[in-house]
Length: 161
Image (cartoon, rainbow, N blue to C red):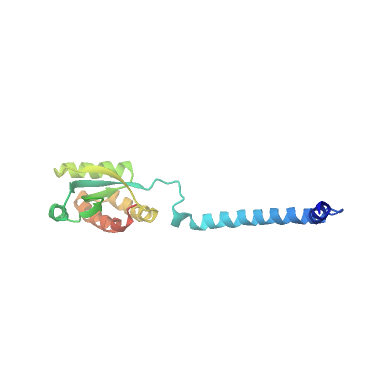
């Protein structure tokens, strides 16, 4: 029986072993190539990027009840209310990048609005959308900051991680 097993795995020419090893190497190479291709194609959808998907959101309050959060939100046009665990947070602005964040924070301070800058994670698609607004913010007058932030915040609602 032992001789039969050896003949099955290896004959005198060694062709069976060569074919087996080549088949295994080919399967491994093909699997590696297909895996690399799949990861490359899905990197945006699966968030494999090394980019940091955090933005600075400007919070004006945290509330236990939705009614109180909505009442507070009425004082800030364009603001949104986000449920975070057992609490409701009211955000009035969002930014990405140090220049934009500092100018927006200065804007709120000039209006005597107490804000709490909070780092939050968002999707990469929201980061791409937000990057479209950055040139607008840096070139516009502070009078329309509230309108632009309102539009940005509307887009952020479904994009939190």
